[in-house]
Structure formats: C-alpha cells, structure tokens
Length: 476
Image 1: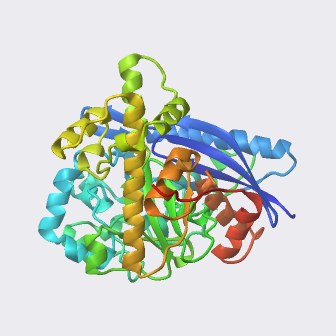
Image 2: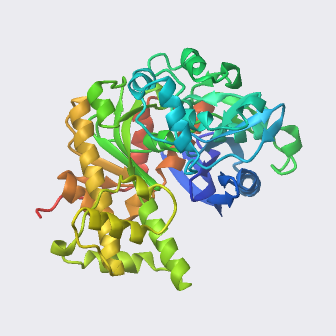
C-alpha cells in the first residue's frame, strides 16, 4: 500500500485533538477528526487535570476517526499519543490514585526546597542536564502525599497508553523531562532516586519512540469499529514530536515550538552540560532517534491567552484576537514597552495585565493601558525573550544560527513572527502549524514501514508538502 492512515492523539495544555494523517512517500495530509477543551480544574487541594475527561474525549475522537478512515476505504493502521511533559498519574494495581496534579499548582514550591536540601541543583544538572523549572517531576514527587501508597508511576501519555493497551512502558523523550533520567546513560538514575527517597520500583522500563506498546484492549473493539489497533510510542513529549515536525533547513538552524510555552533551541547529537549552560538555564531533553533537544523554555502565548481570558471574564464578551493583533501592529514603535516574560509572576493563572503593570512600575517603565498597547507589549516581549534564547543557544552550543524555524500555533501570529525576526536579526520560517501532529504521525508511519530513513529524510516530506512563510528581519 502506497499510503497508510494513522491517528495522532495530541494533548496540549489548553486543548486536545485527534488528528488523522494520510501518509505516503509523497503524501502528508492531515484532517482533524476531533477537538476538545482542556484546562486546569481548581479543587480544594489545588489545580488538577481532568484526565478522565481527556481520556473519554480521546476515545470518542479515535472512534470517530476509525470510522472515517474505514469509510474512506483506507482504514486506520496505528495510534500515537503525545502530550505536555512532567505530569504523571500514580497507580496501585490497576487503579489510579487521586486526580493528577497540574504542573502550575503551587505545591511544587515546597518540593523544590525539599529536593535542593538533599541534592544541590548544580549536581542535579550534571546528572540530568535539565534547566531549573519548579514543576519538573522530581520536585512534584517531593511534594506528593500519595507516593507511599503507589505501586507504579506513569507519565500522562504513557498512562493513556496503558489504559488503551494494558501495557506499561515509559517513552524516552518524556522520561527525559522528569529530572530522574541520567542525561549520559539515558536510563533511570536509581542512585539519584535513592538520594531523594523515591522508590525506583515505581518506574517502568524506558523505551524509545518507534516502539510498539501493544494493541488496543479487546474491550475497546466496539468503540473502534471492531478493530484492535497497535499503539506506537512516538515522541510522547509534544515538543519532541514537534521537533520531528520541523523542516529544519540545516543542522545549524534553530527552532521555536511556540504554543503555551515557547521552546527555543537546537537539535544536537550530544548534550551540553556545562556550567555556562546551567547558568543560562538551558536543558538537554531527549529527542527522537537519540538526538538531544538543547533548549530553554520561554513564556509563550500563555501570556496572551490568559490576558484574553481575563478581558472576557471582566467584560462578559469574547475578544477578537485577530482584530487586537491588527490594532497592536499600528502602535508606534516608540510607544512599545518590553518587559521580562520570564518573571515568575506570569507562571500561574491570573490577571496578566495587572501583573504586567506591576512589573513595569518596578522597572520604571510606563505601563501599557489600552488593549492594543498591552497586546503589542506582550508580543514584543515574547519575541525579545525568543531572541535572547536564540543568541544563548548559539553561544553555548558553539554553533552558528542563521535561520529560525517557528512552528506550532504561534506560527499563525504574523506579528509575533515578524517581531522575532526583527529582534533576533534572523529570518524566521513559519510553519507548519501542525508540527506536533506531523511529527507524531511520521514516526507512526515509519514504524509501520510506510516511510523509512533518518529524521532528515522524514523532514524532506514536510518540505515537499507544506509551504512555509518567511519573515525577514527589518532594520528598526
């Protein structure tokens, strides 16, 4: 068969979807079969994910997609799951203990202190290669009340894979974000777990992307039109799948996977674990095919979406983002305020315009007051954060970076793309917006034998089938 159809379950921090991909040597066609909302649930003990609702919606989307594929005469071949990193579910037997916490929950603050009292961050970085993020899994576990009751821990995409198949494995790219994987051996650091008082027996074996986890359970055949489909481990950390879906023009090109967060970095063959990279807060996360994703987290469109949410809440009216971006583009450059998007006050949900105004007051800048001014300030500040991260990545990896590929939802924001080109003094090639789903689907297709070759060869298919938009830096 020259083409095959695969199903990607792509779960983001604000929405999830099921995407059908028709893949062949010269074919890369995507169709969104289902989309559903996602977000934090505020319970008395903190922020949680509605994971059962996500699973229910994913099953409904898979059911619809399988039937659509059958009606098209192709039939679905496999399923792959990707999601955000670091969050997990605890199991006792087959039962889920509690509702998984959201990484933005404030409990992680006490976890950071507890971990660093046992193992200083400098030593952690030498072992796991990860930038400091207060919500990394190892910090969450230090604040976890149910840990002693658990028999197993699965990161969220692996937990959904277990519910689909009954099989338990931990996919490597997501394991690398926990802080408990050794960056040099790419296996669980049981010595570190012992130092932190975490039972290594909680963790399942680490498996590379491209591994077949198992077939969907017999009890799901009714939902899946009588079929049992293989579930393939893709780059289950959504950024890992997104990087597969970046049509990198060279090994010296940088990428920005821009959504709720902006992940800014390079694809390398080996990690960079130096004092300079630690001080710059750069991370070495696992990539597909053993590559290293050398990157740093920059606040992304979360600032913008949370601002719109507050305005909608205050006014009771939906906000027109395209119109606001058009108006923001007309704000004179001399009136644009730039602030530090990495300030910790912007991490939790809340009133972002008020927080921006407070930060501007602290830094002796006039706070933007009108909506177009606020939107422009947010966009330019995100772009400034991206530009600093790109310069740091090039310096730390000792690589020239002459072009930037920006993928994900942020690639649709022309104002942000142009601002990133201007502030970084590098061309920005925007697209594809569906990079995460594309990366997920390409690994499934390669595992099924429809495609073959290296990541570079897989990316050539993206270049042939998806036309990007190039933004060139302007003299300002």
